[in-house]
Each structure stands twice: as structure tokens, then as C-alpha cells.
Length: 167
Image 1 (cartoon, rainbow, N blue to C red):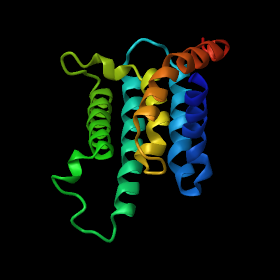
Image 2 (tube, one colour):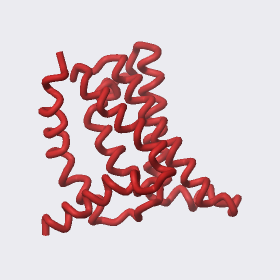
Image 3 (tube, rainbow, N blue to C red):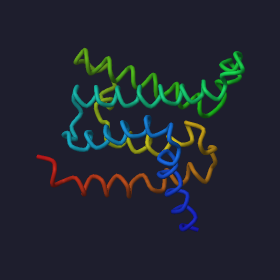
């Protein structure tokens, strides 16, 4: 059973690089993830700016993909479209991204929102969700379970692997 999830994980990671138009969207997210891993783990305003930019970039890419797939249907963005998982996730990521970016630029976190300065773990989820959000792969329960199963192992691998590059 775990082998099935392993193959799904490989598919999720590879898919954006197999679609030429997606490389423009995924490479900056990987770069942001790498840069986030090199920053201190303590929440600060610089990491909030990084988080905000990465979230806004990802949501802009997903909205672009959504608009491309619905370009011939002007009524595609409606109340009914908001029920779609991809649109809900896109809007949530956009709102959190704007909040993080504004907090970082203002150098002040809203009450109970200091988590916006922690950007390391969120980058994995944006990378993993990217092919589904860009509509290259459909959202399925198996893909969601795969993302959750590999979250901690990938984070540990990246965290431990980049320790020599951190100060």
C-alpha cells in the first residue's frame, strides 16, 4: 500500500516539470522553499515577507491556470465555482499571503498571527499541491493522503540536509 503512495508522491513532484507552462510557476516556489530553509526558524518579519511573496506567487499561478481553463466561459468565476476545492485553496493561500506580506512590510503581526513568520513547512504544501491546483492532476483522496504522509519525512530530509548551509 505504501508503494502506491510512493508512486503518487513521485507523480505529484514530477508533474509540474513535465508541463512546460508550469515550470514558470513551480521553480520560484522551490527557490523560495530553499531560501526559507536557510533562514532562522524563529518567526520574523523577513520570513513573513518570504512567506507572503511565495503564497501570492502560488495563488497567482493557480488563478492564471484557472482562468486559462475557463477563458471561453465568462461566468466561470461565480458563487458555484467557489465551491471547488481548487478555488477555495487558491483564495485561502492568497489571503494568507497578503496578510503575511503586509505584516512583514509593516513589521507588525496581527494578534495571534505570528505563525505567518514561519514559512518553512508551508512551502512543502505549496509544492505538493501545485499540480492539483494548476489542474494538471485531479484532486483525489489518495493524493491528499500522499501529501500528508510525506510531509514530515520530506521536511526532516530538507531540514537535516540543509543544516550545513545554515549558520
